Length: 107
Image 1 (cartoon, rainbow, N blue to C red):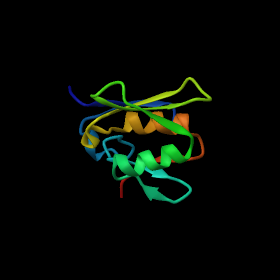
Image 2 (image 1 turned 135 degrees about the vertical axis):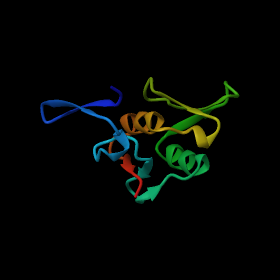
Image 3 (image 1 turned 90 degrees about the vertical axis):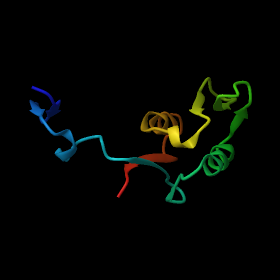
């Protein structure tokens, strides 16, 4: 028996083909800047948004793109290659910038 266990509305069930399940997280996600309703399509776009919110770029690690905000202990670490920018990185940005970004399913 293979598949994915899904918990929904207090019920657990086995979904054998998770791609067909509507609640599946297999949909591609996008990061959206809420003020401009702009989908973040590159690190240069993301960097300009983060800099305008008071984040500073760190250049310590050549394998990562890192941003720090002086007023907090928060650090955003992203893979250097934008193609490796995953939903976990997007949610990290959302949590550290409440009301500024949102993760959405790509349509």
